[in-house]
Amino acid sequence: MVGRILRSADFQRVLAMPPRSRSTHFAAHHVPACPSVPAKPQRQVISTELSTGDAPSCPPAVDDLPAAAPEPAPQGQWLGLVVPKKHARRAVTRNLIKRQMRAVMASAGAALPAGLWVLRLKAPFDRQVFTSPGSVPLLQAARDELHLLLQRAAAPRR
Image 1 (cartoon, rainbow, N blue to C red):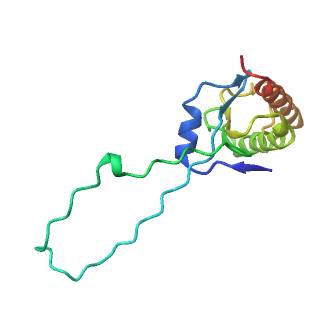
Image 2: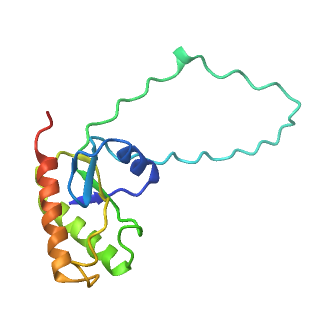
Image 3: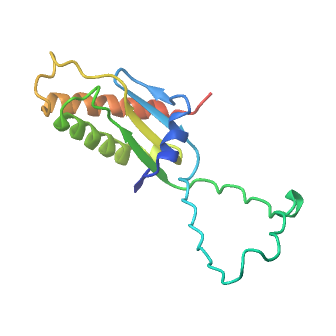
């Protein structure tokens, strides 16, 4: 199963990388990492002591800080979708394209390396060719192009 990227920091991290593969209308970005985890908010401790007491101590020396644990190897895939209104004006079209992105990722995901994936619509489909925003030809064209895009992305990098 493919998880969802939810945090904007993860989207920014993946989109900062160059596309792993491109097609006429889409781009696939990939980072071999796990999604970031939000920091737990620290509980505020209310003290009954006066603030004129002892001054706070200095922070610990850098050498005394615990070592940061290395990020674990990613297991699984997380998907983020970017379908801007600039390229798909009608909600029907945006939803159709997002459904196709999820379906193709679910079917072709086993061949792809683990990590964070963002599929992005980078150019609009021609309105002269696809007159209806939710048409079957548009659905088939998007699906075929996404299959090709992910096949290229699955190929080993040189």
